[in-house]
Length: 74
Image (cartoon, rainbow, N blue to C red; front, side, top):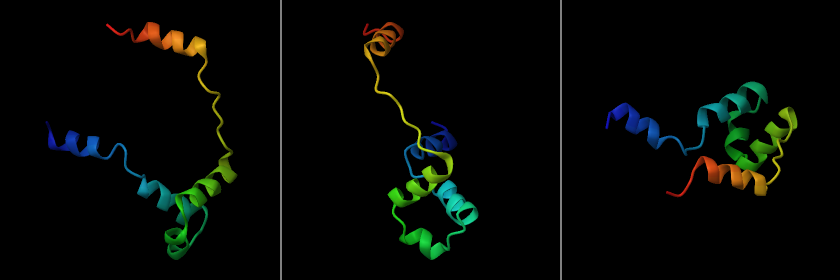
């Protein structure tokens, strides 16, 4: 596997530190000390206060049926 592809794949589930730092320091104007003392939940709450909370309805039976048709088991 290409080293770049392998490196990119290993970062898919990591925390987006650069985005979090840019948001906290640039948008919220937090000091670095405030950022590092904050919990991920506090950072998330600050983000939601600016952009609003996105709520998703749970998947229903129709959603399940469409997924089963799109991705059959064999």
